[in-house]
Image 1 (cartoon, rainbow, N blue to C red):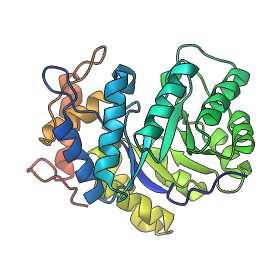
Image 2: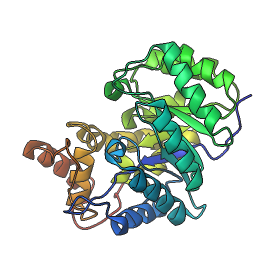
Image 3: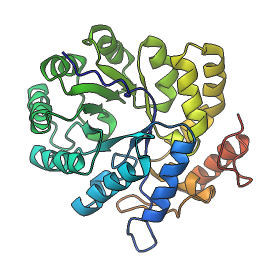
Image 4: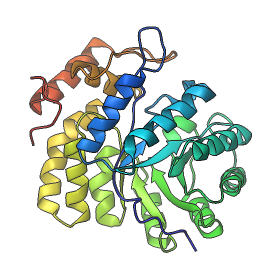
Length: 307
């Protein structure tokens, strides 16, 4: 039976990784961003994932960012560390390092570039889960980034096989697939939206929350939206969803995390530094982001949304 993880619920943030002009991790900025998330009501911190440019981090940086997240969280929030790579052995090394750094769970993306079969995906996730059998594992399905879809049948097979595979972050945008998982999942297995704009409808269908990008910019608002939906306050959730939707959409005009970093820079929360091959966004994207932020009343120096 799937391990029950009661805290795997609500709004999680796929954290950006701030860099200095020299390309180094800006630890002071990262700590400040973490504190802002917790103050805004976010209870799931997700470092070193797609939004955190995890594929560009070296092992020392990777482990350090997880340790910083754990240190700042101090059990006020839980840390789900991104550890995925396209090599199973490397993923296992990262998973063990994340466990050593104190992560509460790990987020494991489908191996990118290799394009494994569904049998290969089962073998990959099984190996990772067995290597850290005392640590909760959350699958991460984002075919648009990996060129590899974890089917509903594969997700359900893994959920039924390994007790520590406790959930999935679904960013496939395939509603039929996600509903199949929600309908047939074993008890305690959680589904988290991997797409901000799908959070409200997926919670209505039984999802437990979201791993959000937009909550980097508006943690308080996204946490409220998720809480409203989980408590069945649909009118309030719907109103906030539509208020945030322009910013949600603007965050994906170009490859994530380019837009969200541009937005956070506009808010004075970090320097707009990315690691190659990512580059700063185009001016038309920046203009649309600023318009969305202005509509929310965020460009007057406030770090919280007026919703």
